[in-house]
Length: 143
Image 1 (cartoon, rainbow, N blue to C red):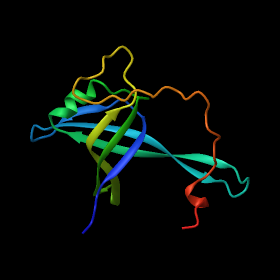
Image 2: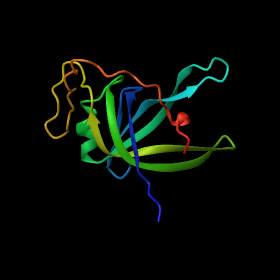
Image 3: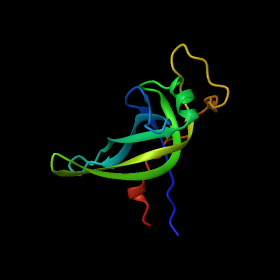
Image 4: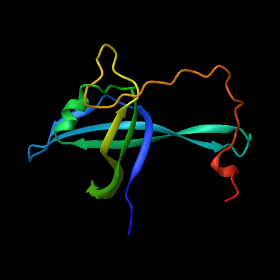
């Protein structure tokens, strides 16, 4: 058995592009930037490295969702990975993208109302006293 599920949270890298496939299905494509944190071997400091993820959403929800997304918006998405390969100019090309099943708007477009059908999270009130921060990352865990 294999499981093909992915969840990411990040910011849109560009305005979404809505198009219609040859079969008449609406397709929405957008990019999401997520950070990976790694320790710099020379300085020992933690640094953020961006990863750019191509995302696609299909069907009637694609058109509805496109009205509420814009470059810079923060979103949480869940979906599955899809691998594509093709040949261009005699060279083999490939990419891995996320086919979006669920999307949550974590920020909304300026001047737009939140959609009624999609959940929009609101930040929780800040605690009175913030707990001390702990610098613990995957690389520090011994298993």
